[in-house]
Amino acid sequence: MKILALTSIRSEYDLMSPLFFQLKDDPDTQLKLLVGGAHNSPTFGYTCKNIIDDGFEILLEVESLLDTNSGSGRLKSASLLLLSSIDIVKSFSPDLIIYAGDREEVMIGALLGGYLGIPTLHLYGGDHAADGHIDNPIRHAVSKLSTCHFVSTEEHKQRLLQLREPEYRIFNIGSIALDKFRLVETKSNIIDEVAKKKINKPAAIFIYHPIESEITNSHSIVENTIISVIEKGYHCFVGLPNSDPGNNQIRNVIKTLANKNSNITVYGNLSREDFVSLFKSSSLIIGNSSAGLLEAASVPIPCINVGERQFGRACGCNVVFVKAQICSIKNALDTVSSKEFKENIRKMVNPYGDGFSANKAYSLIKTIDFKKMLAKKEDPLCD
Image (cartoon, rainbow, N blue to C red; front, side, top):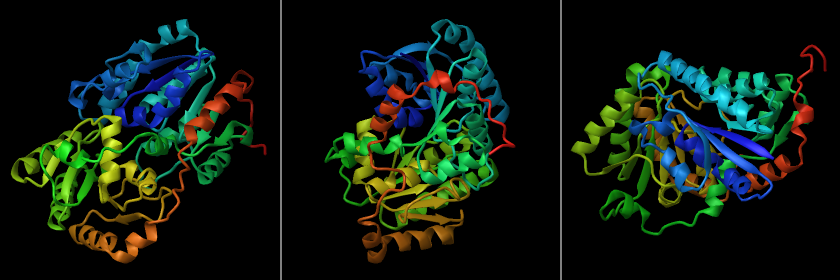
């Protein structure tokens, strides 16, 4: 079986890697990766090197990301990826194309499959946030274009059913993002190792990605949140934002703050092992990263989600949503520090799965006849 997997950003690659490793180790499967987007950008750490180091075979590496910091740049980047991929994907002629999430690159995977007559598998469809961000309609549109769906929760399955996707195309496997917490052994000294010095304070992870509705206020949101975390007695490990429009402003304020405060450690692209170890060794994650909603419950640690991004998505009792206002952020920090809150989350169950999702996905890929599912003849007017 020949499989092509699309990947465009480090976070999504690490999320999918447990499945990719199983497919790579299968002697009856030929897995190749189509690598584009932020993976090939020096600004974002040229993370294509991680894929090469992991031993995966790359079908095509496309320098598609235009560093324009704008929405039009994302469109142009996607068009470059599509134009560069068509002929080589057609020549490889995979039996299945796999892609995950809601970025513009997944739309390219769906279009390649649709027009080249190749079955496609979309992971993380059916999710929805109430933030009005473009990611929502992209995710839902890709689901309608895709042959088959591996979703993370029953709610996501129900949302696809509401989109008139037939049930035989939908499989609830949980989130593969959780598998790494089971598979990766924690480094005991990771906090000091990442900070490059001895840290005698609890650690907090801050990750804030740009969202269109908050771009004009992103400077104050980032600064107020980080300062509030430090004032609460944490050492703040700050992850750099993704490539969405507005990332430059966020990077600049992070750099300025870090230069002035020794309680801030900025990291770019940590290895999979180091990131999981830092996550497991931290006392809190704050910002607006999906890692807080999906993964923090597997440790478990509290998550404070600041602002509109991620609002409305399924989450566990460890997540507190707050407005991007300094008083709300400080109140949330008090809440998650309480003995009652910590006790409440101690034995929580992650709503996104049990950490064995890659095994489930692999077994389904080996047994489903995707070719038989290729033609989407279903009429949305009919039950």
